Length: 219
Image 1 (cartoon, rainbow, N blue to C red):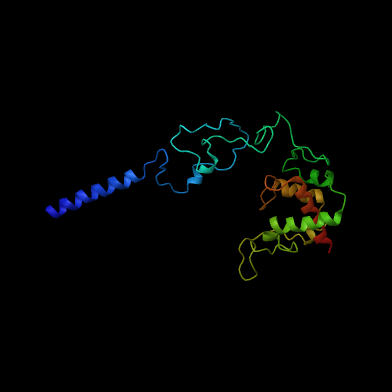
Image 2: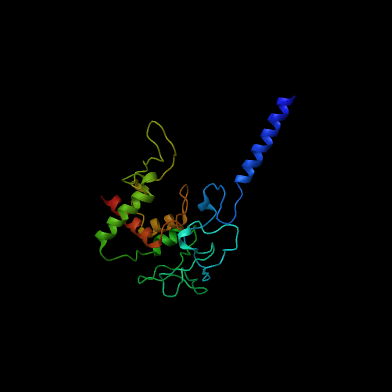
C-alpha cells in the first residue's frame, strides 16, 4: 500500500511539473507546437497597424524577437506610406490593356453561345503565347487529358487499369471543330466530369490553354 501511495504521489507531482512547464509569460513562452500557426510572421494583408508597441501587453509576443515589435504591428517599413495592401475602391475591378479582365458572366449552360461569340483577345506573338500555353497545359490539363490531349493522362489510368473513366479525348472527332471560345468556357465553367477552373486559372491563362489545345488538335 505504501508503494502504491508513493507512486500515486510521484504521478501527481510529475503531472504538476508538466503542466507548469507549459505555462507562458514574459520572456518564457513555454512549449508550443508549430508556433507559426498561432503567430503570423508575414504582413497581414488589407490591414495596417502603425503602433509598434501594439500587442506588447498580450500574453504572447511576436515570435520574431529581432524586430522588437509588438505582436500586432504589421506596417511595411520599406513602403513610403507604410502600407502593406490597400483595400480596392468599392465596386472596382482589375483592368488590363487587353480589357478582358472583367468577371466572366456567361452561364455554364450557355456553351453554344460562348462557342459562337467568344473570340480570343490574345493575338500578338502567337509563338510566345503557345509556348506559355504549353506550360500551362502541362500544369493544369496533362494529368487528365494527357500530353497530346488524348484523354490518357495519369488520372485516366491505363488500358489495363482504368482509374477514372470518361475523360474527354480532345483528339476525337467530336472535339476537332470546337472553337477556342468553347474551350475557354469549359475551362471557366466546367462541363460533365470536368469541374470549373475559373477560380484557379486566370482568364489570360485560360485563353493561352485554349490556343494550345487547338494547336494540339491540328498537329
